[in-house]
Image 1 (tube, one colour):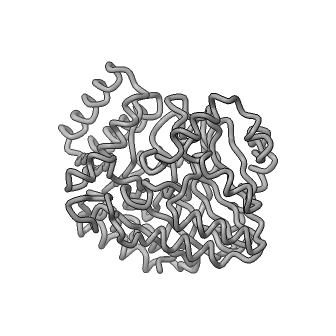
Image 2 (cartoon, helix red, strand yellow):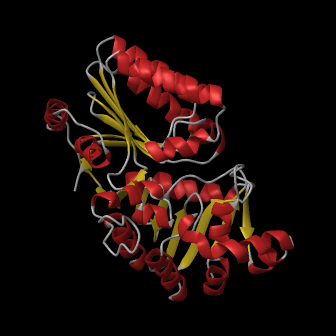
Image 3 (tube, helix red, strand yellow):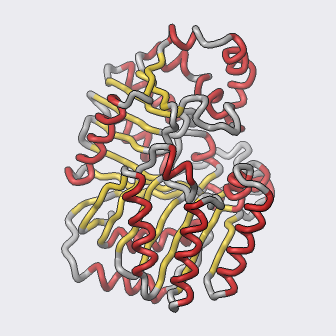
Length: 383
């Protein structure tokens, strides 16, 4: 169980972005960063420029990007932008940075979008940023996201976990963080859960895979402990079966359950992720679960149980998070980690962009929308 000497919430989009750039610009020895994808917009170009500056001044820069995630993010970019991104990444490598595009080893895994979805940034200063954000305009100008800046032994644990998602960690860098840990008191207790299902599957990959995912299992156990309240944010709430059943069990035993996720218009490219989520609405409504849709987009991944236990990180409530993508979450019962999460849910309830969905309002949606849910909702695993 790692611990932290400090935890700074980064719910404000500008605050997280400035913290990321400041860490890169202050790095003197090493800088590691993992992300699902980089969009070649103002944020992507600024980050790549900062990494290039760091490399030129002698910093060991190591960047892990998910291969599938980058292809998926590529639909948001023009051909010229994709080409420019490839040139900038090649120039970064040429300057001495290590850049990996993570791909799982088995063909079956690659065919259905297996990869890594963990977002970690850490430097020799002993600070790490961990959360839900991609390097894109949507994450910093649009959707809600949640990250934390942490110091202490947890930074070393986050660095070491990059080995699970295709990164290569220099032993001297890990040793440096371990030495720094001893110089500061760390009393903020955290749990760190990470799983890359691609490392545990056979030649068929996620097909018929019945293995255990540590993050899924811990979240199920966490939800099963809820006695009074359960609050969840996710991009689109379409969880794997055991997680959905845990949420329904909580609601049926009298726990007040609220789900905050994205409106069908929040993802301009397609509404299929919302369709997959909406297919579970009748069961949620029947159990008394409160469902809210954010028109701007809810991309944070937060669980709050009984206002006394919080988890946050990269794990979306979807099948892919269980059997195709490496995911990670931090959890804590410490008041310093709980206070900002409680405040976030208070803000979400008051946010005019969050619309409560009921059985009646859902039934009033246009017939063509309900028809898509009926036709395609059963293919949730693929969406």
